[in-house]
Length: 176
Image 1 (tube, rainbow, N blue to C red):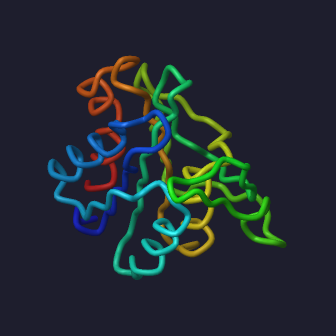
Image 2: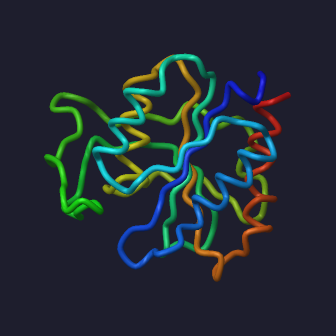
């Protein structure tokens, strides 16, 4: 798979996350692997716009977002058909279900051994905010593509270099 067939996304600032580590990691990995890169505003509108404009000319979509309360990099295995009450940066939220009759969806990007690195683990809980919304909508709209979401942590918890080292093997597998 050619690197340009991979899309990486990160998120901008929101709440008390003024400098979102997901945007730094996505930029660094995007430059290193020469992928398409998108840094998304933390809003439902921005996610919807990105998904409408992305097109079909890609093989894999790996999105990154921050989970400030975690202590490891998490590869999300499941997207829930649920949205919580937290407002986005535009002061908006959505209905409690993403798809009125939908079911939870499983990530399609992860391969055997992607969580081997000591700082990486699998997770079944992408939350109920924009990270989960992006993962769910990506899986729903692109069922034939490889789609996954990585929750990263603040650099005070795990440094940028260590998080890059932990995520690189996934991209290495995709570009082989």
